[in-house]
Length: 102
Image (cartoon, rainbow, N blue to C red; front, side, top):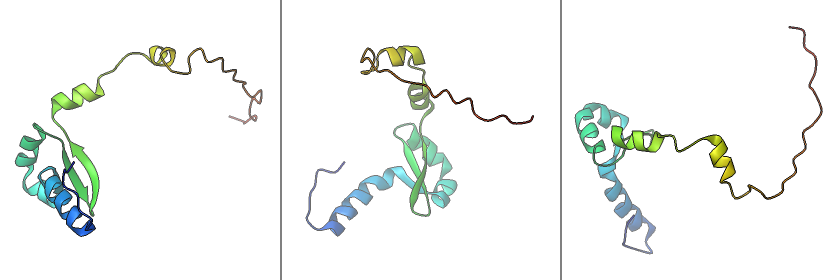
């Protein structure tokens, strides 16, 4: 984030775009500088844009493994939910659907 504040929205957008430019690449630029994109991704995530919109993010393998690591089971997650023990009574619809010839 940027610490500077301005009422001029054009000025603000210039500050933000300059700050993000070190981490943002167009597809063409990323192709042309793939080694640099990979090197920078070791330090911080790199965003690749397509048609002016963020499309993908390249991160280091360490960050990917950390973020995608399983953090327990679904049963544990549900047991630790704020709704656990809330006394919710859920009803299931008895409709069995329709018969289809298979």
